[in-house]
Length: 108
Image (cartoon, rainbow, N blue to C red; front, top):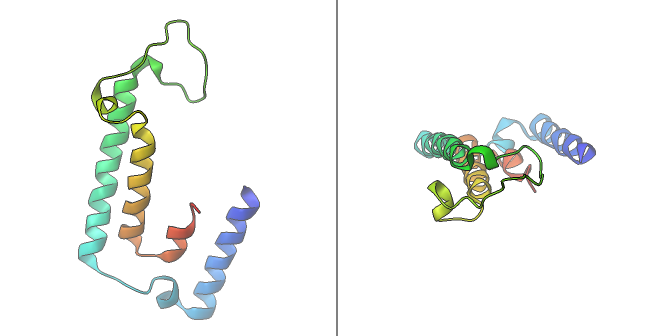
């Protein structure tokens, strides 16, 4: 919802203005942030692998295809919906890379 996103953004800006950057971004650790960046890079690779494995089965929106087949190779050997797993890991990577609780709360 656009209004929820705008409300969260406004709350984050207000917290930053009132409490300062340390209140929104209380901890900084370059090792943890680098681990988050590495996790995000791995997620980008995983996202590309999922798309490559899906081949012609991939579509930006749900649709019935004439020659629809179940993809069982690549990342689909281990998970039925690996793209969702990549998105979840990317959320954790973003939290680690930024160490910012406002960004961490965004998907909620």
